[in-house]
Length: 288
Image (tube, rainbow, N blue to C red; front, side):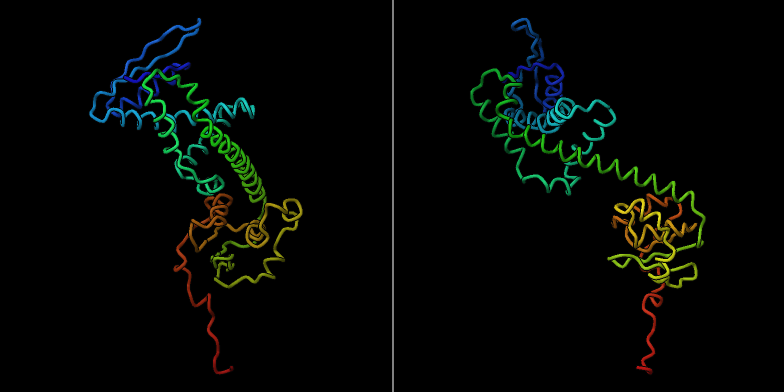
């Protein structure tokens, strides 16, 4: 038998759920110690055959996927003084994405480290003694390194959340500007070169960089110099076309931004849909 002692009832019940998934039998009961209620979880590791291994797996999952998020929320509330539930949920979602490997651009800012191995080794030390384990003390002393890592994740997630909020404000501002503009051309075709875009009008005649520069509303660059791309976003907003055909990939960050700004005005098409002869005008070799 292995016994965990918790200060929080919810922790005991969550761990019990994790262990049940691994076919472990456990008993939950409350005790009173120094006039404080504690919550005990006693686990039978005699069955199944690999009961101790199942206990290790279930407890590791509980720590990495439940407690880490609890610690992150505690840091947000008590160290960064977040109170708004919606903000907290959005930041925790970013942290969850990081922990599932879905935010590689943020994960690469952290030192590479085997969290599951660290947790298993920490649990090994307390399981060997076969005495009741105070989970809160275990977390404070044995899992301190993991908690410090979660604190780093929280800081990265807060920065990312703030950037995403600024981005949404930026998109909203440009949508409002676009709604106020009168169109200068009905249609624009944008061909992605990998380094930028070539502009073509509704007749598929290329619009030169000089022509685009002359079309730009200077207020865009004066009022928002840090946010508005003068080569693509500013000309498109100034032209305010009814339809924009973009030939490229949705993996392109700028294309995704254009889709967010222009919404239903944009159609994304494969690059090979654009007539290739228009990209490479024929050369009169006889005159060379």
